[in-house]
Structures are given as structure tokens and as C-alpha cells.
Image 1: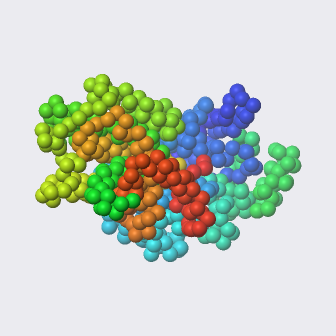
Image 2: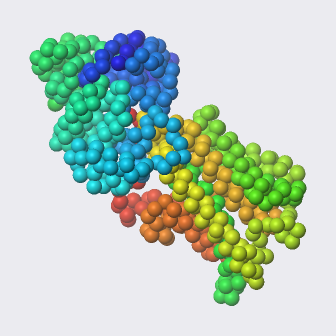
Image 3: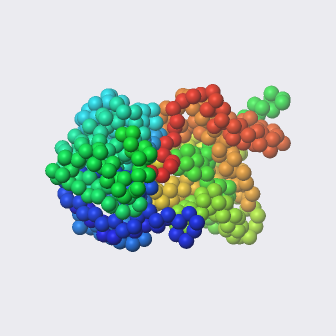
Length: 264
Length: 302
């Protein structure tokens, strides 16, 4: 479903701020794979997702989604194949627009925006049903401005928007990191449900190692712009947090022990 | 101020305020919906009138002239849009560049003269300051411009409810989210700028007819008046305006209030400066006294 071949990216090349963010990423995802990604700060996790989403062009390599080479497509054209949820709850929704308008925007992802009405009554009923899955009472507030919602509600709404039109690949960039533990659990639960229901292929970045182990069927660990550990199936199921920590200390020489991941 | 003077000048101020209100609707599209400060309007506020007057002087009909004025405004918006998106120049600077260039373009449109007059007795003008009193109501400048403003409001209300219109609103509200939802933010910004400047050019065409001439300087400071109208409308009547159409009408009302307040033209510069000061202070005052949920989201990169 997704193939990354030798993807490289350097920010601010040739300056004092030069940062080699991705040093050749090779990754192949099969249909239905749900991959969790862990790694310390600056390991290149978000950079990898942004490369796939096309936020900026990559320096080298190829990105292929379901047989379509998207390496040179701009962000808004790749959006057709991708569902995205961001770390910052403010990023995924339009605050000055209504809940139903946000959903209507998302349901037209990848389609031409014409002079037809932006939202119709049949859609509204459908959105109501979809919002019920989130169990946040949003189905009664279709015309409320999204800016009035809490971070958790906005994140749940973004998740719904990302999956409203079935994406070929769902990209979750630490989408529960900014939420309180209770809300985070709720959003994560909804994520699991939707991925299982629609049999989605997904990549989820997380700082919580326990989440990384309990969710998904495959786990990859990144360090300094490379994938250093890739585990799936039974082997992944038997992983423990201590195994991951040990793995990390091996590659980073112990520096990882004081990273915020420890707390998870 | 002599109260009789006020009453005498009131209808004229209303008509002029209404025309500037249409112009302010254009400013509202860029400033509020697209979240861009577009300074092109200072130039477009002359271009529309120049095109309309010159075409009518050369024998074209009123509707064709108005349509061409609208198209000319859209072209100016397109120029600013391309400066901003294709060439990556900041929006404010793009607007200033177009505005500067338009000065020469406007002079050329007006045949190299700094102003051109058009006489309402010889040409079938839509509005004129002579049609304020003692004319049948359908010829009254105030009535005609009100109809015009309502028509534009209705069309915009429809447009911003369409898929395309929603995409433009999303672009202004949160560009990151918009691109993630497959919206080409650059194209939408250009469409918004074109629409905005088209409307400003229409207002310019109306103003030129109303005052009976077009002048190279008639657009000077237009952005300030437009912003003032938007702000006055929001502060004074914004509470009553809940849907999009009534928000646009509040902007028009803001422009009328502005023109009634500055009945004495000698006070213009002082009042304009004060309005700008208030306008600059509003975000701060709003935060201090009305602690409401933030209106705009998005911003920072993922």
C-alpha cells in the first residue's frame, strides 16, 4: 500500500542550521498494516509523515502509495489518498467554521470543488450517525463553530474527517499527545475502532511505548533519521516496554533514559 | 455643527456610505474571510470607475461598462494573487506592488488625464448625486445602491455556501487543514482576491457615476475606509449579525455610519487616523474585556 524507497531530506542545507532529518528511509506497508512508530526527539518520525504527506519536496527517493508515484505531487493533490491527524488539535480543523461544514469539506477530499451547495441534508444525517461513534455528544451540535470545542473534541473530529472518505493511508502524528490521559484514551479507542472497521492502513507516531506495543500489528523504531528496528506479528505482541528501552539504549548510548518517553 | 446642515447632508452621506459599503464588502472578503490584508483596493477603487466612465464615454451601454469594470477589478486581484502565490511575495507587499502599478494603468485607461467627467444629463447613469431629492424613488441614488448592495450580498451568500466558497473560507481559516483536505490554497486565495477586487471595482464604478467624474486619486486611502467600515460594523452591530448575509450588511452599515460621522470633510484625516487607532487597539481590547473562545485556529506547522 505504501512504499518508501531511499527517502532523504535535509533541512537548511549548506547553512549552520543544516539538519539531516531523513537519511534514507526504506519502508513497505501492506494493505491493512497498522504501524506504530516510536523514537526520541529529532529521530525523524514527524518528518517521515510530512514527507509522505508532501508538506515539502524530498531531496532523494521515491514515495509510492498504492502503486501511484506521488513523489512529485503537491500536498493538496496527495490529500486524495491520505487521511491525516496532527499533534496540535488546532491544526486539523477550521475553527471559524461549523462542525458540519468541516465534515463536508473532508467528505469532498480529492474531488473538484464546484458551485454545488457545500452541504446537503442527506449528508447531515450521515454525519450525525458518524459523530455518534465518537460518543462526545457532537451529533447534537452540528452547527456549532469548531473553535468552541475542546482539544479532545477537535482531535476526535479531525480523526473522523480523516477517515470520512476512506483514505489509502491514515497518518496519525502523535494525535493524542496534547490531550489529557482520559481524553487521549477515548480518542485512541475511537482510532482503533475506525481502523478495524474500515480495515485501514495506518501509521501512528506515539511517545507512549505501551500504546506502541498494544496497538497495531507492527512497530518501527527510528533514530537519527533511520529506521533501526522493525518488528511485527507474534514477535511484536510479546514485546515489553523494557525490551524497547534496552533497544534504545543500545543505539543511543543511554541518552534516551532521560527522554520524555521514559515517563510513558 | 448646525443641525439643519446635518439633515441636508444626510441623504448624500447615506448614498456615499452605501457605495463605500459595497467596497467594504470586498475588503471583508480578503480581510475577514481570507485573512489577508489586501492593499490592491486603493488602486482598484479607481480602476473600476475609470473603465466604466471611459467605456460609457465611448458609447458602450451601462451594463457592459459595469461588467467590464468588474472584470478589470478581477484582473487586478489576479495580479496580486499571482505575486503572492506564484512568486511567494508577502500578501501586503503584493497588494502594494499592484496598487502602485495600477496608478499608471489607471492613467492610461483615462487617456493620460488625471480625471474624466461624465454628465448625467447626457449619459444613462445608474446613480448620481443629482438624484437624491425630488426624483421618483426608483431613480433615487440611495434606493438604487441599496438594491445593488442587497444583490451583491445575496450572490455572496450563495457563493460562500457552495463547495468552492467553503473551500475559500477554509483556506482563510486554516491553510494547513485545507491542504490536508485536498484544497489548493493558492488557487483559492487567487479566486478570493479576484472576487474581492471585482466588487471593489464595481463600487468604484458606482462612485464615479455618483460624483459625475473619475479621478486618479479617488482610491487613495480606500483600504482604511474599508477596514474602518468592517470594524465599525462589527463593533456596533456585530452582536445582531449571526449569519453570513447579516454580517455583510453590518459592514455596509458600518460604512454608512462612517460617512455620516465625517460630514465635515475637514475632519476627515483626523477621524481616519482615530479610526485606524481604534482598529489597531481592538484586538487588545477584545482580549482584555471580552474573553471569548478564539475565533481563528490553525497557524503553526504540524
